[in-house]
Length: 128
Image 1 (cartoon, rainbow, N blue to C red):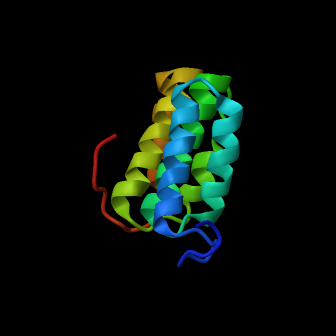
Image 2: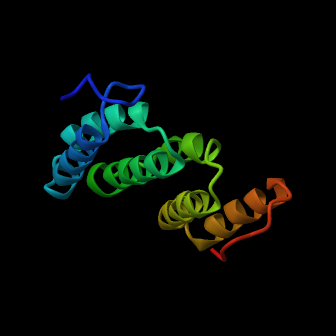
């Protein structure tokens, strides 16, 4: 029952899971507008790094593959707040893919190099 859940946004885990499946279904069935509406709500309700990252990845896929858009803020805004290295790496890998697809491999390498230069002292966890 939406609104009576145990999460700050009012959704419980079952409602959030159902909403995520509905957003994925809309995306995979070629309904990008509906998918984005569902995903925007999920983004506002996301409580963990995993939830925030999954929603951001699907939003970028929806914008890039179904709408032809490349709003990298969908990734950048979330990646800045992610502390879990696995999910941060997933977000950055997708970002580099989109940059490379739009602007070529040199642009992706330059973006990656810039990210490494400004990176914190945190060790690298994966090669991209």
